[in-house]
Image 1: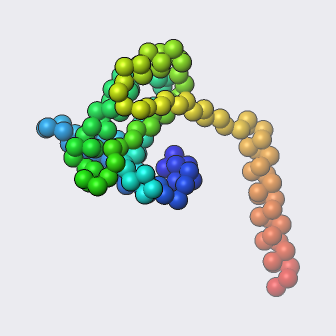
Image 2 (image 1 turned 60 degrees about the horizontal axis):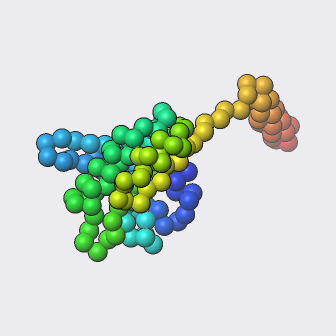
Length: 141
């Protein structure tokens, strides 16, 4: 996921995976933390392998508050949070966001794996190309 996010643009700077913050006597973990040079702000990504739940948004807002109070520099803009969930119920998201004061967006992602036959076919193609290349180099020496 970190590599995917870095592909979004050259202004994303990776700060940490499972970035630890402390509030009071408790430790909390932000899944991925970036800094965006153009926006001049921290960007926290929370990754959920489940369907969106309203408490996910509360957790993300808590992290953003902690970042703004304890991590961000005075000259930087308020932190931004991005919540990626496996899927979502649009109406539940709408209700959860309706009284939220911070601008927020909830997105869903899908994980797709190629089918087994396609994977086997690609594996055999790679193996054959490797075998062909090594046998050619052996005959030319």
